[in-house]
Amino acid sequence: MFVVMAATASEAEILGVKSHILAEGMTPYDHVGVERTVIAVVGEVGPRKAVLMGRLSALPGVESVTPISRPFKLTSREFRAEDTVIRVGDAVIGDGSLTIMAGPCSVESREQLLDTARFVAKAGATVLRGGAFKPRTSPYSFQGLGVEALRYLAEARAETRLPVVTEVMEPSQDALVADYADILRTATVNLQTFSRLSAVGRVARPVMLKRGYGATIEEWLMAAEYVVSSGNPNVILCDSGIRTFETYTRNTLDLGAVPLLHH
Image 1 (cartoon, one colour):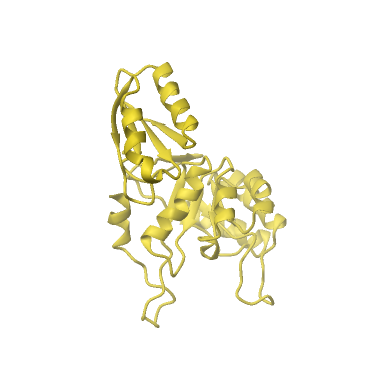
Image 2: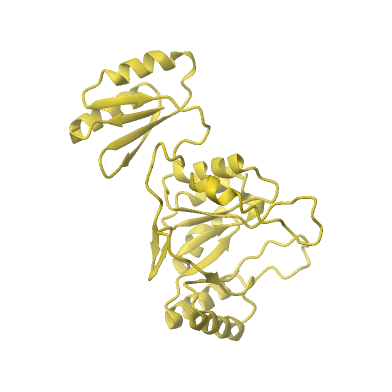
């Protein structure tokens, strides 16, 4: 459920509502909007929903209490009506402008990355992408240069002024990659590895969440919910295609997901 505070609600009244939610064994997540504060109540309510809604409605400063049936709460427009706008370096993502993230799938050498970075910067790219740790179907395929590639990405950023996005595979890499990259990208195979999503949500970097090739939109949003509920609201949703009956292309880009996600 969502607790909508009155526009005139004081900080003490907001804290009072959050304290009451905690006392009920629930977790409050607040979003301070342009006009008012909305508090999401997350946890197992069960049969006491009506009673809890009544108690919260009676607290000072509360304008309304609204139930929500959708499983995703913190990623919904009901909780946060404004668009998510993320700024990394000179790039702005989510403000309506076009963001181009370009670069090699995998960083293979210093020369390859720097040449590519210069080319995409000149062509108008706003973010440099490149894989340092690469998930492969075969254990014998190239797995990436690791930390060496991260250093090359940092060097390319210093030269081109393009912020860097790269993939993290496991929690032990989060802090290391965050020292070099501006945006952390999750692999499609990790979309429903929930401990992985919670861990990356605790890193102070925007997270690009790639849709799994077999994931529904609701499953994708629930994955984002793990990241946001761990404290990181700066999530970028990336649809890299889903598996369908089509065999001529690797994955089918679900363009219909874009306006639906905006909604």
